[in-house]
Amino acid sequence: MRSFARELAFQLIFERLFVKENFSDEEFFVSLKKEEDKAFTKEILSAFEDNKNQIKEVLTSHLEKYELERLYKVDLAILYEAVTEIMYIKTPYQIVVNEAVELAKKFSTEKSSKFINGVLSSIIKALNKGNN
Image 1: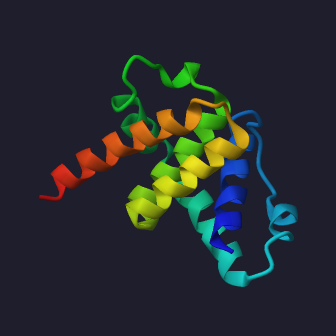
Image 2: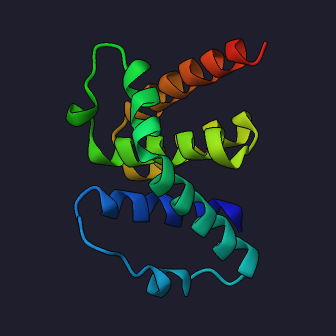
């Protein structure tokens, strides 16, 4: 299921916020039964690693009254995963936002889902302006 694959990608990005060494993610992929889900998770992680600096810039430019370094790490990992999907995987915006909000409800604070929704909406609006 893509939701579970997306959740795993979020968890692995979260781990990367704390551990700065080389990763061997294969043990995590055992929980994914379908090869297409493994491929999807790997695609997200690869896109995140390859484009981390640009993703940080996009997030930073859309955080009002917040600094990237001061965000809850769970929220930051959710935003990293979502922005990666929006910009590089080209998953439809509505799906990404819905899934990110659900991850926030499951793993973060009571107010995080609204915050994440707002940040992602701002990013999507800016991306749509750029495409017109």
